[in-house]
Length: 242
Length: 125
Image: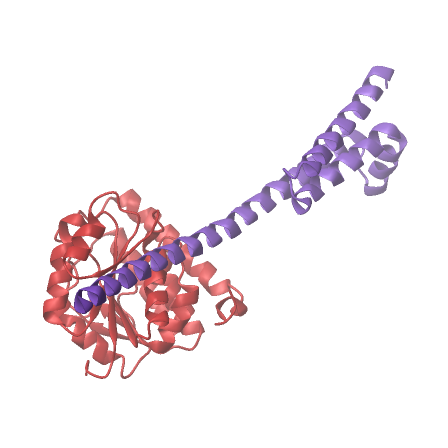
């Protein structure tokens, strides 16, 4: 039921000129009613120009803020321009725009819908320490959110009006904060979180990292992000305070 | 204690206070950042002019060698100054982030307004 909602697709992009044009075109083909906002996160290549030429709105950050900063920019735009739903789609093409409608329909039941990569559809696989890290994170956050979440680091997610207002103010900029801490903020603020299985595709450009040392670092930082998100005073997330 | 080391202590303390006050006077240092430095300078000056206060304070808290109290106080003050700087840096980064996001959205809005105006002109003509 897309017709009732004004949907904004937010696409954080850092030096993604090679793929962002095709992804924008594909999103607009799959879902002609949505607006696409590409947040150019301080790219040094032609990301902004390519995205604009493909028909997206483009907000160009003066320097790199990380995915969290780019997403908050998107949430602010959505809040200030009266959008009812924000869907985050990665500019590297690993999220399938054909599943947009599904995620948005999920907002009927929840404030935040995650597209989960391990929930059965598709053949996205991660192995070794990184996989264990994801499992530990998922089970912890599932307990906090009081719903079963199998893929808490998925960037493919849809936010409803309540989530948009919360995130426009409190979307974390910290590395990994954007995925993990955002979930904790949402559940601590009483938002309802749900997940839907989605298929992931191979990235159109760019390479994923799978080095063991990197995976260990990833787990450490993720754990830290989680712990601090949990012990933060409740007043931090009040809407209305700066 | 020799006269030379007595004078050295006083001169060093006065130098610290002098530099801090001069920076404050020229507006190169804000008052709230200067508080720790002024505290350190004043304590150093008191201890330098009246060494017996240092001995008395050391005895009071059970430190056997008064110099160790100086080191302890010095490290503690440096620690708090560094911590305060990190905290302020965090606050500044937060503001810079917000400004960057704001600038990007304003830029987008200007572009849209300009495009609207161009379209309207074309319709008028």
